[in-house]
Length: 81
Image (cartoon, rainbow, N blue to C red; front, side, top):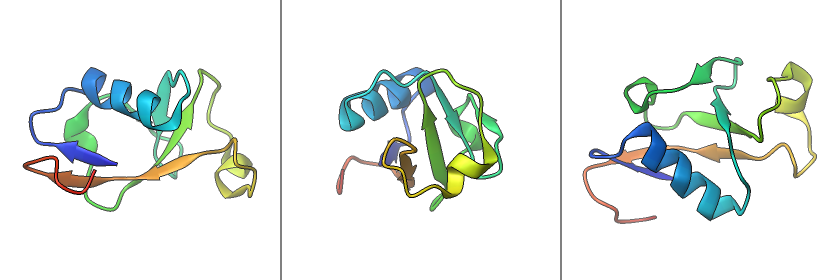
């Protein structure tokens, strides 16, 4: 998922919802930290998408496709989305 420099957290979350086709409510880092600001994101971060559930450490390593994660790339434009 490409994070455009002008993105707000709400706009980024909306694009995540559209891309995955789920009503994502929360994003977590691989260590379980809640992401609520795009300023917290860095290139190659892996985010875990939640429909509202709390982060479960074991789910982050699950082969279950419901435990979807998205890699993040930060860009000044939308190339590569």
